[in-house]
Image (cartoon, rainbow, N blue to C red; front, side, top):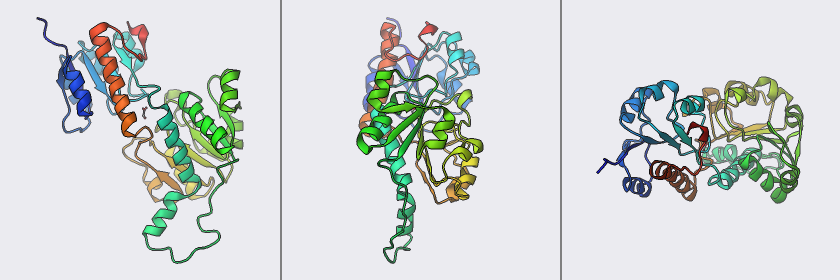
Length: 326
Ligand code: GLV
């Protein structure tokens, strides 16, 4: 009998999912959940045909050259900027991600962060916890209106559309968006979203939410020049990826109140956070948790496992990123 294929689960994953994978494969796990260094990852991948990865594992051309037995890498994330897709395709290694299962949950969180930012929830809670609340006041923590305001969305994929629906249908917001390609008329009508240029988006949004993928082309898509185009009363929310916003420029703008507030779930160089963001009061900071509900994280892990099992046992993955690799 052929030995069972060997796979690596690069970070801690739910036991149920590990058990499913053990039905098919020889499984190596990372019990400490400490992200591997690139050298450790190469070493752990020796002899493995598949891997379950997260955003903390960079799959580069160098790694692929050092791991010639690898055939498939399955990210437990919808974003895959940790993958060098061209190198994967050249090496004929299939890559997969976890779209759809996290769309609504992530849109919920985007809205939660937008509301927390606009309504100054973190800032006011810190004030209360510090024992500084000694009387009610008419203008205390008066924030920005959410209902009826203009919601700007940069990046109008599945998650952007789910946020647009919440804004338009739930909060009576005027929704404007900018995206590489314009949506078809039926989807625009369903989302009640109007396509505008990036300049118009920056100038008109009361709340600007970023939901675009990270790539060299979207690096610092929001920097000092873009922030300067926003309304001084505007809020900025990033649930997409660190690096899309120039965090140093944003911290300076928040300190000088060039925009009112920001809500950030993702950071350049995370889990490190730019020290200036930690000291400005008008920013809500969360540790990359937009898709973090137990049902959704379970669905993401199971979809990644289904991709691994499907590809290695039947040659078919459910959500491939680079089917041309085959
Ligand atoms: C999380 O950031 C994801 O890409 O799923």
